[in-house]
Length: 278
Image (cartoon, rainbow, N blue to C red; front, top):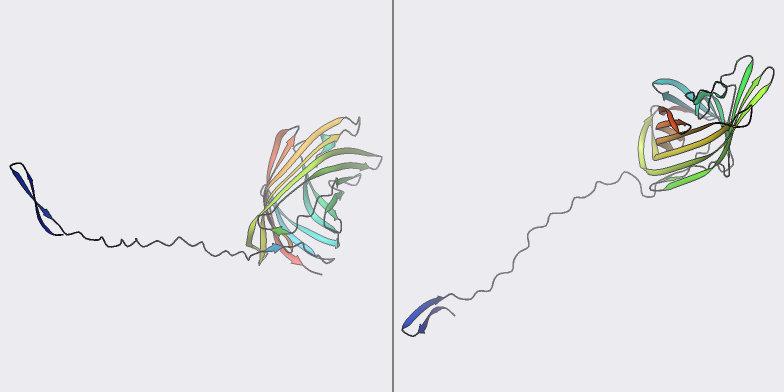
C-alpha cells in the first residue's frame, strides 16, 4: 500500500510515509568475455616419422662443426644395413699409449653396422691416425642388447634404452700388435617434443624435434698387465632433428670425464647439406 501511517505512543504521535512495494526487475548478467582461443596447431593429428628405407648408394652430406672447426662429412649406405661415415668424429676413444685423457675423440672413417631392424650392432674404424708403420683399429660392440633403433617418432613419446658394450683399440705396427680392451655400459633417453620444419641444404624437411641424452661409461684394461688402466665417460645432451631421410640437424654438448673428473666440453653442430640418391 501507499500513504501515511500514524503511530501513537502515549501523548506522542509519529507519522511515517509508506512507499509502494516494488518487485525488483531481474538482473541482467554482465556480458561474458570469451576465453582466448589457442592458435591452431601446425602439427597434423597423429603425425609420425618413420625409419628411412635407404637404397644402396644413398649418400647424406653434412657440415660438422666442433669448437669452431668445420669440415664436410658423408654417410654412404654401402648395403641396406651398413652406413660408412667419412670423415666422422667418434667420442670416447682415447690415445691409450700416450695416456692423454684430453684426446677423447678421433677423426676418421667409421662404419656403423645395423641388423635388419636397424638396431645398431657395432662401430669400427680402420687406420685412424695411422701411418706407414702402423694401423690403428677401433671397434665398439653393443651387446646385451644391441643399441635399439630410434624410429619411429611420435609426439610425447619417450624411449629409454640401456645395455652393455665392449671396445677394442688395436695398434698394429710392422712388428707386432697391442690391444687395449674396454668394457662398459650405455644409456640413451630420447623424448619427442614435437614436429617442425627445418631448413637444410636448400630444402625444407618436416622433422621430429628430439630431446637427446646418451651416456657411455667404459673401463679400459692396460694392454700390458690387464689391470684397470682408465675409466672414461662421455655424455651427449641436446637436440636432434630427424626427418624421413634421417638426421637433418643436431645441436648437442658432449662432456668427457676421466676417472669421474670433467676433462673437456665440446659444442657440436651438425647440419644436412644435401642428399644424393642412386
